[in-house]
Image 1 (cartoon, rainbow, N blue to C red):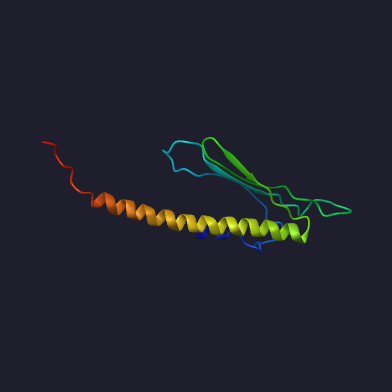
Image 2 (tube, one colour):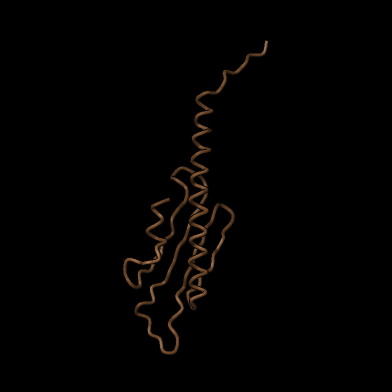
Length: 122
């Protein structure tokens, strides 16, 4: 999960570093069109007068039949705090999920290797 950390930093590498990616979640050869779409608009060069421009921010996660879309706001300090809390909570849950999935996958592989022989019916 550490590869995602570079995308979820509170101190971006450069001012106005937006992101626009759609990544397939399944390896080649696996069915389905599962994906994650991340988009944070770079408003560095947007002109504004009274209020700073509100960037378009999208996070979509889809499997073969369903899609979830999470909303993030940066228009106030409270909204920014909530948005960062939301993504931090999601990242933490995904890290714990991955650790549990890895442990269960290892247990399953171990059980396959040590499967009792089939009994023959006589």
